[in-house]
Amino acid sequence: MIRAHGVGHRYGRHVVVDDVTLHLPEGATVGLVGPNGSGKTTLLRTLYGSLQPATGHVLLGDDDVAGLPRERVSREIAVVVQEHGGDLPLRVADLVLLGRLPYRRAYQRTTTDDHALAAAALQRVGALHLAEREFSGLSGGEKQRVLIARALTQEAEHLLLDEPTNHLDIRYQHEVLDLVHSLDATVVVVLHDLNLAARYCDHVVLLREGRVVAQGPPAEVLVPDVLEPVYEVGVRRVDLDGEINLLFRPAHSLRRSA
Image 1 (cartoon, rainbow, N blue to C red):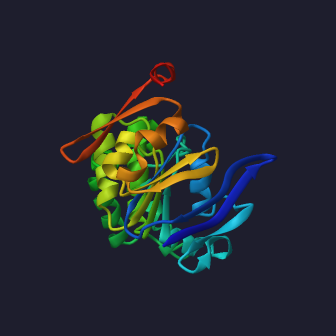
Image 2: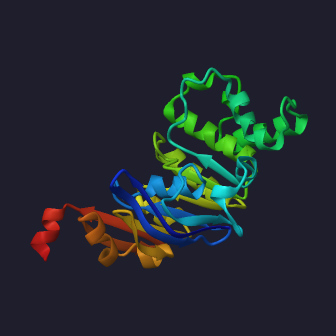
Image 3: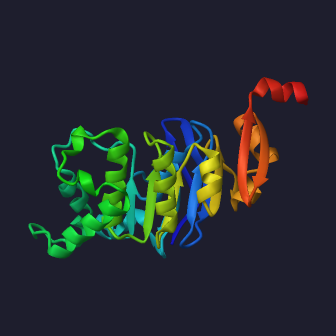
């Protein structure tokens, strides 16, 4: 389980994450949501140790992530980020096999089992037909699915994703999030689309200016009274067939109705 206690981070004098405490439900899909610049990606990076918090600490189990060997962190946390090195001269199959690196000793060759895991991961994300293609030649959506396949090949208990639906059409947005929600893992995903968060997340953390405004089940967090002051737009919520649907209107119409 990943836990954050009083985590803060700043770039120079600019505070980006401020006193964030999180206890992520084990086995849940957790959505990090909030306006642009609210600290979602920076917080995600502190959770897997890419950034060291200026204050507080992040625990993986009972151990501080900052003091753990990178090999152990990589076995327990798989990450899909937006900066994916699109010019890598690698076949898709070889890129996905990189997910097995935490389990191999130096110069050890990949095994038959490694290749089977990579093929199964590509199949799960609908990208097995891309296995022999060069990664740099793929579309943005194809690259995203391949990177998720690499994370699945890592077989980690925690999967952290930074805006995985970027560059995906509506079909694959839902297919990818349905996939990660079905995994036997704790998933933390940065999302901009609140309706996707409502549909696929078990727990939502709402950030504003680096601080947690609200966290809990989507039914409790994704309500107009909470969302409107954060996003500065009008919000109408419609619950239909047991699902939350959010409708938005410009801020000037919100002021007129006040």
